[in-house]
Amino acid sequence: MKSRTLAVAAFCMLWAQMPCALAAHAAVATHDSAATAIRHSALEFEEAWYTGNAQRMAAVLHPSFTMRHVGTDASTGRSVLDQDVDARQLLELTRQGHGEVPVVMQRHDVTVLDVYANAATARIATWYGVDYLQLTRWNGRWLIMSVVWGKTPGVHKPSNLPHRD
Image (spheres, rainbow, N blue to C red):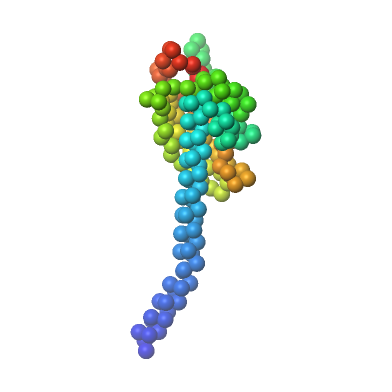
């Protein structure tokens, strides 16, 4: 009788935990699908830049998009905001081919750093440095709200190509 009572108690405990386990599984599946969509948006962003495709770029930018880069003033050594670009400006730079580089220089290393509700961060390792993206789920799609990028010191585009900075 005692073993039957223990078996029933164990069954009840497992049964009670089932909704938690199912919810955890659903959360992992949701996170995985969000991460896949975020990775896709990040890749579209970088590939559009590399290929000068403003239409692809426009498809992943939030209307309030901004991109910034902090550099160093060579004469003073102080930090300066040397790029502050909105969506319209980035689309024009993309259209003009400022990001175009040969395929051998293109890198597509995307890492989704965090996802929470309708917000996410991702990192793209590029030939010139690193882009940190903030994304938001906007009307069912993951769009890039902002980018802060860092340039690897001493790395320059070949002189026969347009310059990004």
